[in-house]
Image 1 (cartoon, one colour):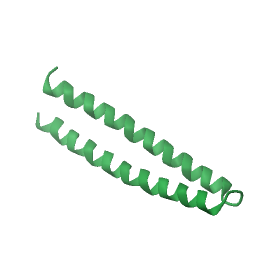
Image 2 (cartoon, rainbow, N blue to C red):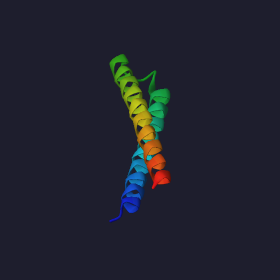
Image 3 (cartoon, rainbow, N blue to C red):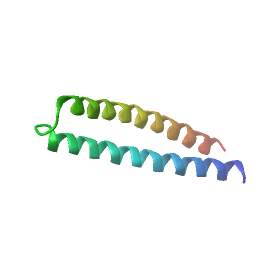
Amino acid sequence: MSKLESIKADLSLHEKILFAAVAIMITLVGWTAANYLAVKSWLLFMALLAIVGISIFIVYQYRIIKKLIKELIDV
């Protein structure tokens, strides 16, 4: 596998991971908004921590994708 194909494969993988993380975050925000009156506060706090963690993960994945695109342009 050439370097170009390897970068393209990595880029595709990280894009899929990013989209899955965004979908999970949207789902968590929707669940929290729909159930904030019916669940205990510790569960809402855990959901908030998960949302913050996924947000950090999304930023990390985005930076990896930007780096891979820059490598792809340089090749």
